[in-house]
Length: 311
Image 1 (cartoon, rainbow, N blue to C red):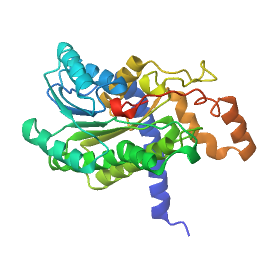
Image 2: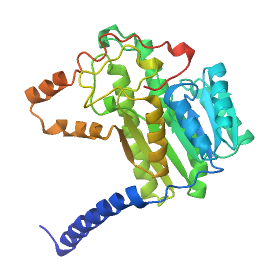
Image 3: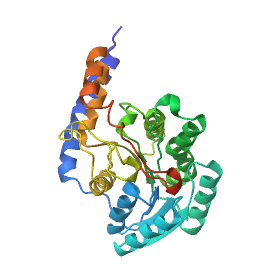
Image 4: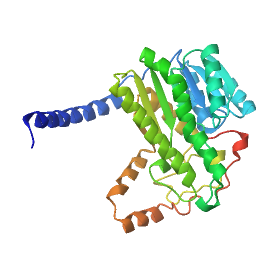
């Protein structure tokens, strides 16, 4: 039975939802991005690709950068370039994000040597690029450790200080395949879907605890032109182009500054959620039309041993 109280709450929810839509629309064009000058920004997988580009963009904003990567030499190159771009300070650490003990150890080192992290960006990622039955079990474990479990470990290490001050930002670089799977990406898609569910749940916990000063951003990009995606192709480049890494880096940082909850790059990726309304045959028809069966056919990729790269 519908009571007056439940009816009132429903109407209130609808009115507020409309208001928040209007507010978000206005703030997207007129809002003032938050100031990150002097903030400590930690980026995993910072030696290459999107991680390096985000470092450059945060450097221009006067942030203090903490750069993690397994590739020490390339990470130092990122640090040098970030310093030239105006970073207040840059600290580099070698860290295998797929190893729990190492993540916690390096996190403790960062807290002692730099301070409490204000913006945590989990970007490190690897993929195998093979059919499901050809993926060794140890490769599945490795992908889940780097792409998903590392988010769990780093958040556990740095979130308590954010909660204490009710200030901070957690960012997870997921992927469009976390919403819509792809041929030869079974273990990668599984890890990215886990990331989405994880950070969304953490966001709910923070809201329930009244910690509204801590923001979360889940980023879902399409394929990005980096060493990790050598050989990847797109069937419909006008609708879903292989993205320029500099553009993606700028877009992600802009989304963080605007406290975006979800960030789809390009925005059309958001339409993937409509798959739940499609009939089975219609769904597979569109999957074929967009080339999801063929995108990874000529994939060459990049060895994870040379450093983690996202997309």
